[in-house]
Image (cartoon, rainbow, N blue to C red; front, side, top):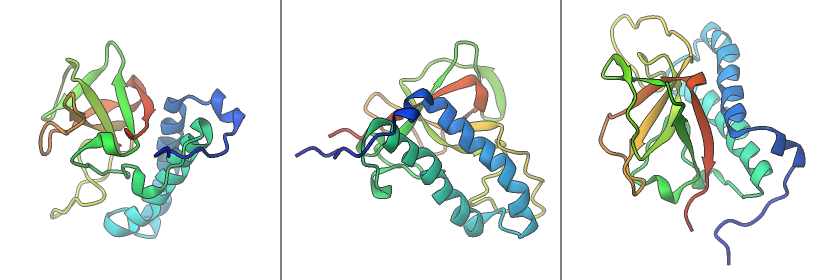
Length: 180
């Protein structure tokens, strides 16, 4: 029995790249965030309550219809989540383009390839909206950056807090099925 039961595909989705799917989600965040601020749902649990299902609905549901693979929530890496082993869950791979620069430790630098990068979320590289707490939080700067988690060749994160950031339009995104 296949671990990935087939679901009905939508042939129109074959015209939509995986990158377009993720960038559409980022655009939705751009449009939605000012509205979340007006009702004070722009941080912590209220933010998560809106953004996590939106991510699943706009991203993994689209991939299900595009690739014909069932993607129940429990089998996908959630938005702004890290897991001990990315190979056992559906996730999104990020591939920086040739001249992409990475933000590492607060500094922008030429990116040297790592085996694999897993998508974590879109943000401004400063605030973690799901959990950032400090006195006098600075204003959130938008969703122009993509936060990624470097993985070793076996699909395991290389280290706690080892995130990198790229400009969201300087990378390509690719759906990765969980290994059987």
